[in-house]
Length: 313
Image (cartoon, rainbow, N blue to C red; front, top):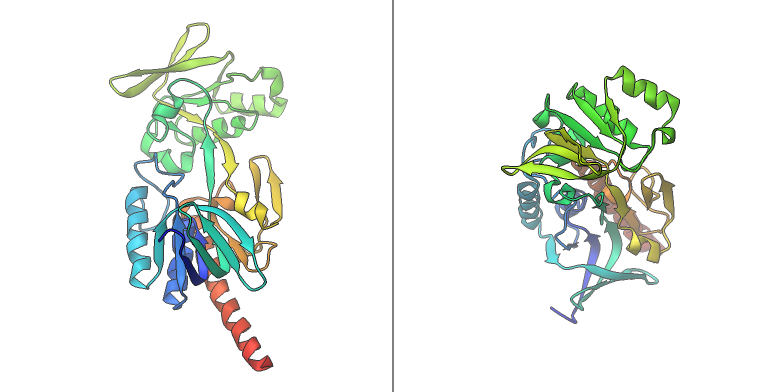
């Protein structure tokens, strides 16, 4: 299909929960829809996803495979490709794919998500999604009552250290490159009240035996026995396409995300966004909900636009 051009009513860029949900609604509304999916879901390292009613414990891979089957039933097309560029025309948008194909759409849904930049500590990337975790709501129940470590990536990690005490009363907070003076007095008081042990000093790496995490090693050689480590990756929103279109972004402590209204519409007419392209804390269930709202809104907007055009003729 390289070099060919296709025309759609809606192109959805991103095939995760948000994108597939939008595509499902649009397909059921009989809209000619294309999903462009690079195949790099944020939650790929996780064996299971939790907190999604009726899908609790399902693997992310199975969830996405099921979603792809569902959208196909309604005629939605899906292509394994990457949206390399997008431009806005007078009446539509041109999406240039990495393969060289160009597709056009009257409306766009951007669900490109974010990527996680993990702390540069040996063992963290290798264990991520197994016994190195970032979301207690996603994984806390499964590792409850084990010995937790929290590897600080900034002052905001205090919140993570406090939250995880809901799942374990044995929590050690490793300051890593932070110093106690970097923490607020209220933070220190709360950590003490929660029974969190605060350990200064840089973390040199994780200790692993028999393919399981057993400890955290500091630069001075001391080892603290731990079974699970929580850490907060640096979020990198994938909003390049939105920026090319001139969409407004909201600056947050966790990066710059698309500014959207309650339906997911961006500041660019004809462009919607959903999922982690709109915020750091959009879990799978939130992303699916956002995609649904965007899809339903777009269908109604296209209908009214076409009717108004017919009236004016």
